[in-house]
Length: 332
Image (cartoon, rainbow, N blue to C red):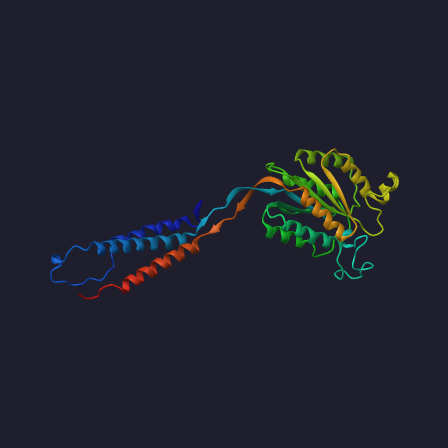
């Protein structure tokens, strides 16, 4: 759909009639004009030049009016999923993996080592780049949930959003419940057109109250979302699958209680324990292989300014008229 930024410019459009009324050509004196034979070619050229003049004026007017193509929504069909990347941005994500690090211990100065969060973002960026037909959303959580990017298929936006969160250090607290609830609300009002997943990237240390558990289960079921937890195990942490009694786990390894809740929901859920960067890469590759089903999605084609094309067309037509002007016969 075409529209104008400044519709009042159309008041100048009647000027396009001037070339059709006034020829603007040089007059050549001839002693007996009536004796000249009919020249159909000359008449056709004259009509063509007048029309070009009118089109040149019309193109300039449309350029002044700011002609543009309006935003469009196009339905596309591909393979992939609607992905919400839910990334833990708490301070614990600034630490190292349990094993497999280049360093033997935590470096003293931030920025001199590669943290779990930085490795995760790099691998998630590679995952997103391999899935150009997916739609991605990004959500961060620490003390407060932070929506970063709504569902979009624009790879440049997705890559920029993933990279932006790796600039500074995280905060001290972890509010997984509100982060997960808010991220699931990204699907609100969206048509169900294919596979939906939330990829939780966290090292745990979170607690869920009973009302929060009920809300999470309700939203996962309502929006038909599969939950994947990429658990990044920290040094000295027993992890999700270690044999720890319930009382001790609640105090020492709260992520085991969260994992037990997710596993007992009866909904699509899978946890991957990544103790090093290689394990995290394998986990993401497995999710990549699992979530590759046919899907329909809506792509937004942004508004496009066409005024430059109007000015270009007007200039080209004027150059043609200028060339024709130089070919005129000035004397008989």
